[in-house]
Image (cartoon, rainbow, N blue to C red; front, side, top):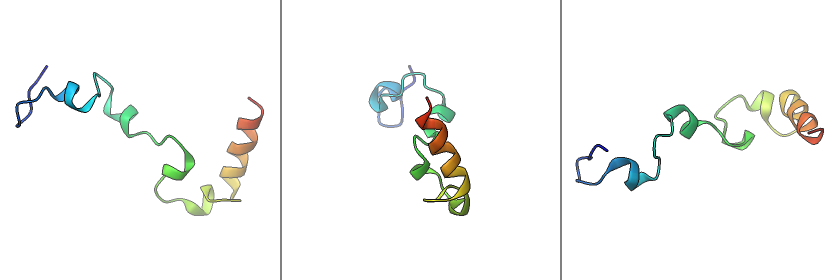
Length: 57
């Protein structure tokens, strides 16, 4: 494992052992999305569609 500037092992220090950056940055919910509130805000088209799909699973 690489050491960072402070001498700690980076992966262990941050608990992100080999997790790709894209996976760490991916929003976990619609509330975590930045922008597009006209589409994914409360009562908006895409949000309604996603909520309907999640109820059927």
